[in-house]
View 1 (cartoon, rainbow, N blue to C red):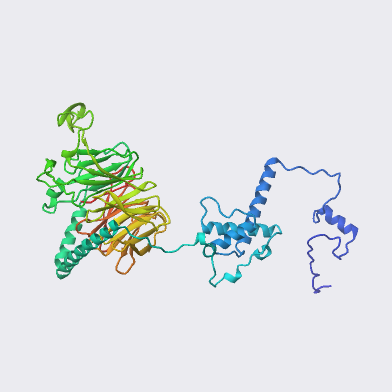
View 2 (spheres, rainbow, N blue to C red):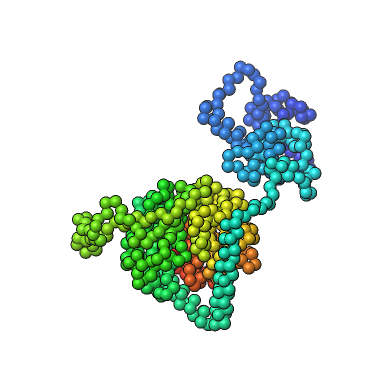
Length: 547
């Protein structure tokens, strides 16, 4: 009838046979013919088309991805232990390898979570308690690790008896550091009393830095150059006179060290002796060439020592005086020898210098069991330090050519090394991202610098004595306050690994960094702003030096 409510529509999903709703056969037949009801046929005579190989592969890949998604979803809600020994015990109980090559604790824990989620989806183990493991007692409460229960794995702080030579060396280092510290503090007091003059000198330094450009270029070797260092400047000379008399030492992967005249960029001496690539070099603090006798090196009464470290696990000391250098085999007698192929900038025939002589090796220091990473002279000149991939750093006596100290404490290969300007402290860095500060007078570790997320490759102290800069594979330079024992500032310095960082040797107002991005940058040591970005190298910059 008109105005009556419409009958409700019924929508049924699934089979209609057992739904409890009765339909006439005619109605069902009409619905089937209209295509509104799809009914599977169980007739064995009906032919079903087989899937193609491509379709089967796509289906298998889809099923695999769905299974992985289910495992990942289940793993997010799976609770696993956090202690390293507990994770290993759980993996062992599941029949999984307790560790794989290069696997870290975080990766191992993720692998355990995935293994448990997969077994839970397959109807297997859903809880570690089913395997007889119960770690709930250790959650939030202290408990003994396996390393504490096993005496073989227990780590303790221990001390070894120092030799007589080391005790005497520490006494000399202490005496040297006390005098240097007093002089440094007196200099800082004078600067504090005249802040305007110090500020004006700083602005002049920054102005000169911003004008830096390429003064000269020289092809050093046929293989990459791993290190370069300016010799100490003569205190009696000033400005360009001191720089012109200095020398530049370079070491390359050919195993050769070369000493160059900083003014003419000519090689004076070549140091031959390493059987593997040279990785680091350092000048003796008293190896200052003077302008008056730079052309006649026989006037130097004491050896001009240069230390080098190599991948052959040795430290070598070289006497780089020109008078002590022996002529290289096949070297011409004349200082200048005509060269048919050599031309000057105007295309006229030019002359080339004779081959440099070979410097004698004053000493070879052996003891490291793996390749070296860095060498550095102590400020007193009586000791030289070295770091190595054998996880140790060592201190050597220059006079007796003997090992004074073998120091461990790093979990990974030791790389960077620097001595405090006072001489009382040393800082070493490793490939685990840690820098350790050592007191050379007592032999104790006094501070651990944590903050880098990757390898720390280089370290240097400020001439003012209270700052320390580290840099490495995380593309940053970190400046540390040694008084407060904290990170003072982090400089996002480069777009690639930072290979070396150095403070300006005399003023300490600037910080220099080099990187694999091909740039050398100069930073203000006051506000850590960028002062200059130096380019010109076509490849990675591995080393730098400041005069």
